[in-house]
Length: 531
Image (cartoon, rainbow, N blue to C red; front, top):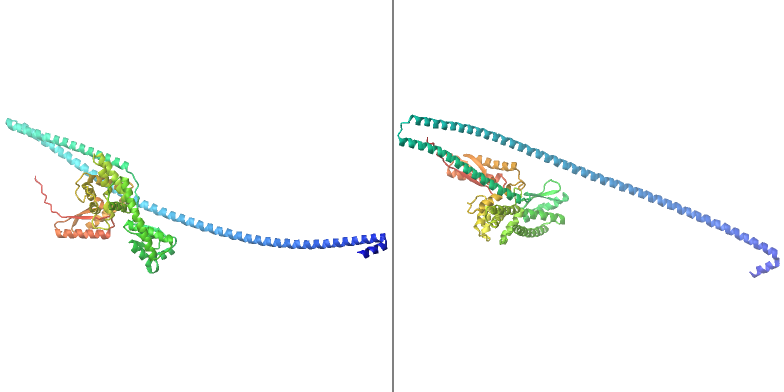
């Protein structure tokens, strides 16, 4: 630095200034050149980065577009599947509607035929009544003619003695008065019968109006929904070990067929059926299906059902306000919750009969509390009639007697409400009437009239198919069939054999609750007319 300054000092001021200016110009030019070079380099880097950003954006745009297209295709496919399912459901509902309409048309056709038959029967009855009326008119004319001839005869016999004329006159007066007295007696009896019928109808209608509960209806077959048909194979198990374990533990029949989405549980014992259905539902939800797990679930479900039975029995007893019942009786009444008769829940039916009996008894001036107890317990035998031999009235009466029921009115009502034993108190006929009202009121039982008549006809046809049978009548709502046999063709010993054979065929060929009594009558009648 010092030598340069010394040099500048020697060269002079002007020269030094020129050199300084030249140095500055060279420095500025070099700086400008360097800035341009750096700017060009930065511009090229920016362009490269922009091009990479554009390329990445285009790639991301293509990826997003492809994803959107795939999502749109998947949504369209799902919507198509949903629409196909809805269309299939609509078709199934349409088929079910067509089936119901066809069934309704068949029912209406059967009803039309029944109405036509009833009209024909009424027409025949009218014809018979007209014929009888014509015969009565002729008989009346004959009687008037006889009286007129007797009067003429009296005029011809005017020469009779006073005593004879008096006797003849008294006989005539006695005959005329007897006819008038008979007319008066008949009118009084008819009026009394009409008044009694009107009073009975009034009491019955009032009882029905005050008792109008709904009745739960169930059948002997129930279905269990399964999530897929693969579950059917798991329920059956290897070589059928799972389904055998279920049937052995519950005592029901498991039916696995081609019906999609369901399996069928069949059993006449509603308690066992309920245990089986709930156990299957829990096993299907749990997914673990093997014999050990099946036994555990069934046992746990059975305990819960037994607790529920006791609860139902206690709640029903509280509802009808009956105290002092043995725990075994409460359990038996609770089992009736799972029992149905022609689709009518027997426990609700018993509660309904209890209240109906109370209403009727109080209208007649009797003890409503006792009638309510009789009505509540009248069907208790149905809780065990499938386990014991005999009809439910007899079974129920013996069961109630064994468990502390000592009132004769209650025992007679249980045993005699189907006329199996004679009625010894006024309460038994009341229970019979309330039982009939509860069973026959509209909506109480699911069974149709056509099915009911069909069962009665089938029962009579079985009895009539045996040789030597003249007539057969199904009575007591199908609980008994009375058979009249030809006394000349069938002996007493053969009559017992016919009764046994009829009962066996009825048991083999028909389905019915409880039992059906077969009564074979063989008698010889001698008839003669005195003229």
